[in-house]
Every structure is written in C-alpha cells, then in structure tokens.
Length: 251
Image (tube, rainbow, N blue to C red; front, side, top):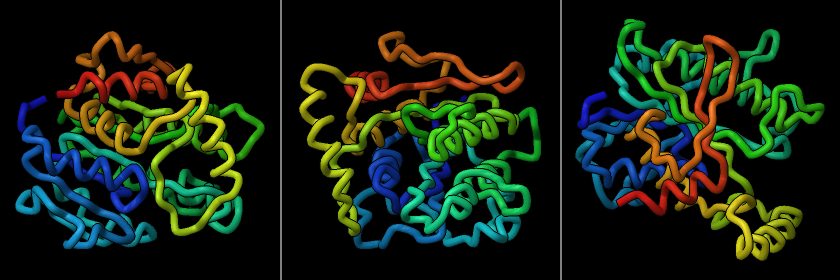
C-alpha cells in the first residue's frame, strides 16, 4: 500500500473516534481524510490538518446516497457503535452494529459501500470492536460485536484489523454512568498490574491510526496480533495489551 494514503473514518464524533481523527489529521502518512457520519466534528474543534479533511453528514438509512462508493479510500476506519441503553432497545442496538432480518446495516453497510468496486484494489479495514466479542456468546453485546466482526471480514477487504479493547478510560460522556464509573475504578487499579483490562481512548486512537498505516503484515511482533475468523474471511485481532504496546511503539 502506498506511503501516502487516503483514509475514511466513520464514527469520528465518538469517544475514541475523535482521538483517531486527530491522529489521522496529524499524520504525514495520510494525505486525505474523509469524515462521514450522522454528525461531523465542529470546525472549531479541529486544530490541525484542516486542509486535508473532507466532512460529510450522511443518512445511514440511505447509505447508497452517501457518495462513499465514488471515493478511493486506502484505509477505512469504523468506530461507530453504541450501548443498548443509548440505542433504546436491543433491536435498535443490533441495527447500529449489524443487520437484522429486515433492518439496514450501519456498520456493515457503510463498510460495504466504502469498498472499492474494483475487487483487485488493495484496501484496509480497521474496526473498533470490544473485548470479549464472540459470535457464539449468549449475551447480546459480545454476540453482536462478534457477528459484526465476521461480517466485516467477509466483505472482501485485502486486510481487516479488529481492535478488542478492554474498559475505555478517559471518556467524557454527557450521560453519567454509575456502573461504568464503578468498573472504571476497578480497572484503573488493575491497570497497575496488568495491561489487559483498561486503555485510555487517546492511546487507542493512536494505536488504531498506526495499525491502519502499517497493516497486518507490518505490525510489530511485540503487539502479539492473532488471527481469527473463518476460511476466506480471516481477520487480525489486536487486544487491549497489544493496542497499548502499539501506541507505545509509535513514533
């Protein structure tokens, strides 16, 4: 993949997405950055790289009208997601993350629309999933994330990288979550003895940008990436500790 790359980010207004966007705009490796989403980052919050940023608000229910297919994206980053509580119902949550029997896909549809019509064109996909993602899980959240991962891996991207972070530290949510705060205190304490349970969102954003630049084959061995997925739909997994290490190694 060329040293000067174009990047698309979907979900840039989210907690991790905003840090990822900042890293992409600051990176000399990305010559053009597209920010597409239901909302886009306010202009006064962008302090660098404005000259290479393209922003567009899109309707995920009308993804074919988004213009994603008309662009050339070397790397597609997706940090779009929500919790069941924010979505309002289990059905709405699954609609955002993956396809129900009749509901439109958000994550999967956007990734599919951003895929080049020329299947021989190298393209990389980097997706922010969750620790514990498992398509066979009896629980809604990890099962939905696991199914989304498998769906993304089947879209034909030449390289698919999935991040499975632990507890996200450093968030600044408008909705105060008591349970989240409680677990944050626990994982914060555990982070002193293990790097497997918590990651700061700024660290995660940095690691995702670097993974998008390098690709699976060039990831440092210290990151300990693993392979998952089914035959013909394999993907690279970077866990919490690996994401922290990748950010540390990034110059």
